[in-house]
Length: 172
Image 1 (cartoon, rainbow, N blue to C red):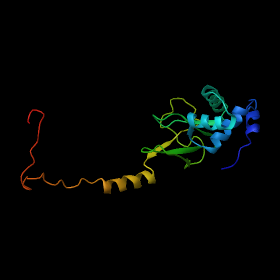
Image 2: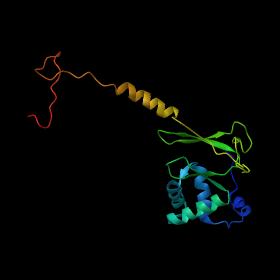
Image 3: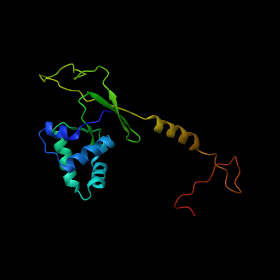
Image 4: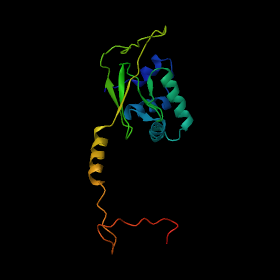
C-alpha cells in the first residue's frame, strides 16, 4: 500500500496540520477498516490524553475532506480507511465481520449503472459483497465435525429398546 504524505494531504484539503489529525491519519493507515474506538485508542497511545469527541471530530473532518473514507456495512459501527480514490469495493464476512478491499471488476466509476437512474447523474456505486471468510468456514467445518450429537446411552436400569420416560414439572 503506498504511503501517504499526511501533512501535504491536509494542506491540499485546506486543513491545518495538527498533531491529532496526523495521529489519526497514521492510526487509520496502520489499522485499515478500524472503528472509531480502535482509532481513538491508537491516537491516545501516540499523543496521551485525547478525548473521544476530539477523535470523532477529526474523523468527521477528514472524511468530509475526502482524506478518509467511511465504510458502513450494515449493523456494525462505522469503519474508516484512507481514501485512495481508486473505486474499490469491500468483502465482509457475515460471521466475524472481517472487511477486505477488492478492486472494482470494471475499473471506472460508476462501475454499475441502474436500469433507471430517475434523472440522477450517477457518480459512484458502492458494492459490499457479503459471505463467510475462509477462516470462519474452516472453523464451522471443524465445529460441525466435533459438535455432532453423541448417541445417548440409556439411563441405568432402563432397557436400551424402551423409550426414555419424559419427566414433566408435574410428575415426581
